[in-house]
Length: 354
Image 1 (cartoon, one colour):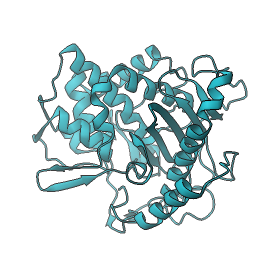
Image 2: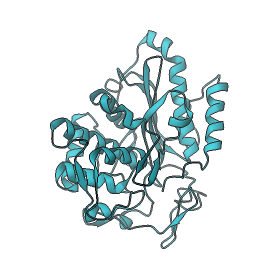
Image 3: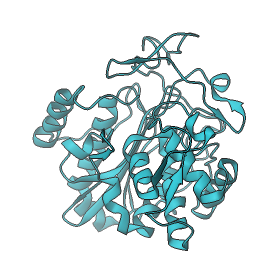
Image 4: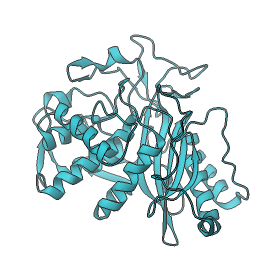
């Protein structure tokens, strides 16, 4: 359900171009619709900007970052290899969009699965990897949560491997920053996967949802996410002059807002990096926990997407039986994926993660 490549590209290109060429004063203060955001140095975790970083939020497809990390660990341990074939089970096949739509029994390699998951947030592929690593989706989710604890993600709980709507699935900008830093630190050999713009599976061409890879100079990863209850999320990395920065953005109202907010943060970081380094910075680990952060999950004030409804007023909800409309213009009837035997449609009326 991610927008088709080409839809809004002209607008994105102009917006990023104006940002990169004409921005003189970078404004990073809170806006009417802005959610939590974070900017830090990937090498040492030095925080360059932070806003509501301990506020609980739904990760949407950013949950796939942990699915990928755990799979990398399995490869490192010898449980899997990049060329290991993994099969599509009934549970994987039952997942809702976005997905590859593989039939039950079809196989792809772990490498192809990882690439499709990073680029296209393929929900069926996430379950395929989960079952290949841990034997069952439920066991894999337990593994995800155990790994989150080991990485210091103290306010994160995973409920599924793909980010599909679940009220129990929560995280924070700080925690997603810790996960992103761990990916960069522990598995640099797979950096190219996070930077891929397109790939082919058979005759099918997949293209990235991360517009910064195309339009922002120096961008080299990582992952986007979207459900109606989260708004448009992104973890974005970029490297210039040997410095890799990572931006985390939650809850933007549109794809364009998500990209511009992340680009704005990154641009601010690169422009101020030298003088900020002179004074030292708090890190993801040393930055004081916000005692005033909300203890219940926060949702965006506004989301503009046909997938969620009209986009007018507070987060729009899809009426029962209404077709889900992708931003690319195609219509599809919403599937009713089941995870751990529980209907996701009953848990949330929001649509699918990107």
